[in-house]
Image (cartoon, rainbow, N blue to C red):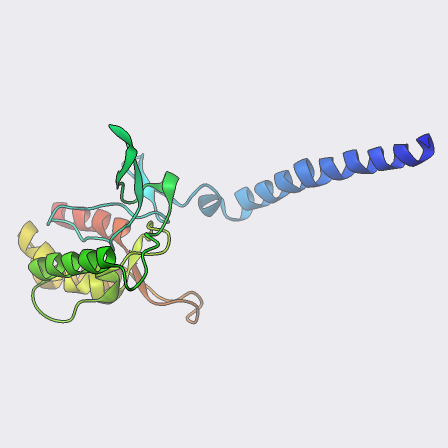
Length: 201
């Protein structure tokens, strides 16, 4: 019986070491060498201080900044654990609203978002990503149309030339990966950091 148990135990220990230690350490080491920025969370620094990640959206409320797409993340109310409150862009609790197209709560939220958008960007077509949330609630990017539609209001709030702000947005558009995968997009955190530099220049 021992002759059957010993090989099983040896194989268990061997494959536990290979798949639980060697393989993860090897993949981590390769990632740190080949893609260190991505492996460490695509962090963005300003003056040597980490201000966010290129992969996680942030909530910019001031009129002086470009706004991201809405986030439907909710969390437990710290004052009452039986209730939930909005916690937009909370990376520790990524989630969608799970509201269906017949949900009155979803309809009301989108209507409120459309009204807020029109108050900021004026009349006209409203880009879908300006008033709808992403599946993760953490989308850091918006479509070029959504960013360009905010140019006039941001330029006015900062007292900047509108053409200069528009040029900044157009320079911030990331093309589809390899020219084929995905859609053109604008990373809001990077755009707003570049906007701060534009103001000081």
